[in-house]
Amino acid sequence: MLFGKFEHSIDAKNRIFIPAKHREKLGASFIITLNVDKCLSVYSFEDWQKYSEKLDALPNTQSRNIIRFIYSNAVEVQPDSQGRVVIPNDLKAYAGIEKDAVINGAGDHAEIWAKERWSALNDSLDLAALTEQMIELGL
Image (cartoon, rainbow, N blue to C red; front, side, top):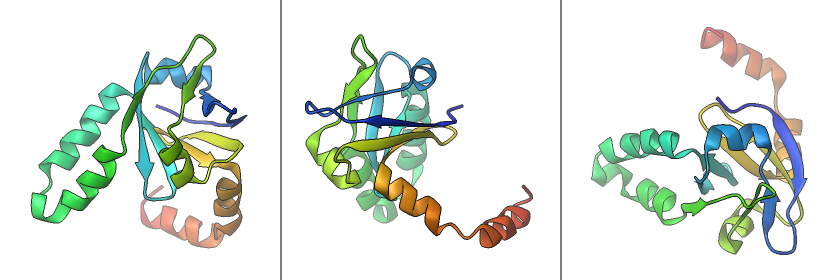
């Protein structure tokens, strides 16, 4: 399970440091793809396989655009000896990552956010509504 929040900067070569706690769970290489929340999702191969099985089980007529969005933008990455991975330009642009980023755990995957987007998301949370939703879900 991936959890926690870490702030790192992306360097001039589009490399970002993936925290050791996340690398341990993600493995020697892993998958990064787009997320509809305008961030990037990071999956271990095991969790990517589970996610792919869910996608592949959906009726093609209802899911083909979702499948195209997810698979066509997925890349396999391997951390270098310093724990950094290269974020392709198109993924970086989609997520709005220019310099500072937040890498957070989201259970079965991690997310990479532009720091500004992460801050805006958290600033916009309605805690009363979130509390109500948690109660409704039995949390």
